[in-house]
Length: 289
Image 1 (cartoon, rainbow, N blue to C red):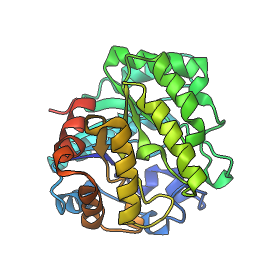
Image 2 (image 1 turned 30 degrees about the horizontal axis):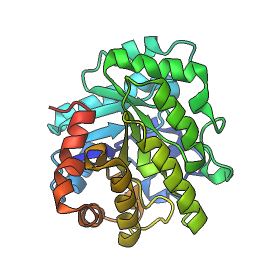
Image 3 (image 1 turned 90 degrees about the horizontal axis):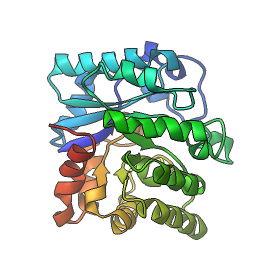
Image 4 (image 1 turned 180 degrees about the vertical axis):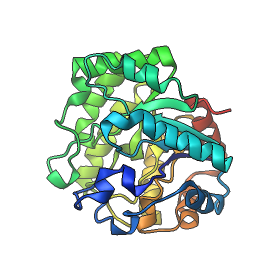
């Protein structure tokens, strides 16, 4: 059982957890303005039978990207819990390869995430602009991941998916891991239709897979019916061999327990698809032993 999206942290390393409260897509976050160590994560994850996991960068200061990877490596070594790392690198740098070379010294790194999500609602806005996926510099840097055998964790909203599909097309040698099944934030009929249309564009690119994670982000609850709908639609577009489970803990710990979250996803995935969604897709995409 692989959890393909989790975080651990020391509060002191993350300015967004130590400074004034900031708008985040997951809403108020006072309960997680604290350390979340590997021992707490493994206690949470082991309760659902998780045996390995993929750490995803958690917005340390951008110049400490190697420190973040080293912190996670140390946690893995000390705990004995198998972890792969999706690290941060500035993919808008003139040439990201020096950063990638530095990260490549860490044997656990399997990919990069630089969050590209931008929204008309400023509460959901993170990136500096709405269409960074079309930036030639970013496209060139993402394409360079091919030489390392690394993936790119892709975080965009529905309105950005056409640009994201163009990025995937421009970088055919890179596997793109769509975060949180495309971050459906507008659950009106029109919003779901726009999300479905964008997801179809991404699913048409064979080098894009979708992570079934963060599905409580905008509802701020573990809603079994909502999880089932997202999982059904995403599996229908991508297929089980291109979908993988992620807990997004401790973010989802704001509103649910790990066993309850896992149970909602497990129930939503047809029995014949569970081996892929909860294990083999993550092992393939992130090159897990």
